[in-house]
Each structure stands twice: as C-alpha cells, then as structure tokens.
Length: 114
Image (cartoon, rainbow, N blue to C red):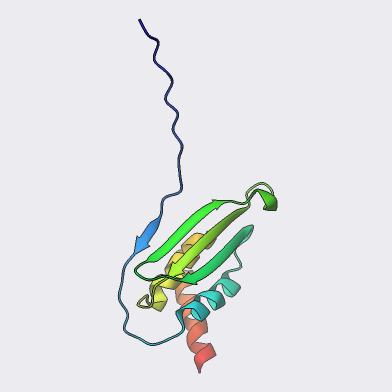
C-alpha cells in the first residue's frame, strides 16, 4: 500500500477587483499619489500605474525592508472614483478606521483643489 504524500498548500495574496464607473475628469494617478503621501503606509513600498479595466491591487513581501516589509502594485483604471481609490489605498495602508481615512482623504483633496 502506498503512503500518501503530504499536501502542501501555498497561500498567495488575493487580488482585489473593485469596479465602479465615475465619469468625472481628474488625474486619478495624482490623486492616488497624494493619498499615499497622506496615509504614509509603514514598511510598505507602493507603485501606482494606470490600469485598463479594473482597480487592481497585488501585494507581496519585501525582504529587503526587513521583517514585516511588503510591496504593493496598484492599478487604477480611467473610470475609478475618488472614493474607491481612497478606500482601496486606506485598506492597503492598514489604517484602523478606513471610513474615517477615506473621508479625510476626500476632504484634503477638495481643500487642495480650492
């Protein structure tokens, strides 16, 4: 009788797809960069790029930043709303109160535009 080989499972960070269409014209990448400046995620390196279809987040561990260091790549489509971008980035940064962080980011952006 053959002995069963142990099963090995590898968990890969899930990709998050958030789909919402906002017809407003604004620089979504610049908004995301301003939001990241305000959020200041610790031990997290984030790259932002223009995506084609959906808001996309990929994460991984960054061994060069020591224990707990990680990286993220955030794709922002041309139809993403400020709210969804802010929500995704606040959640990515690991803030304790995501709704408060989203409202703060939106208010700060309105103040910057005024």
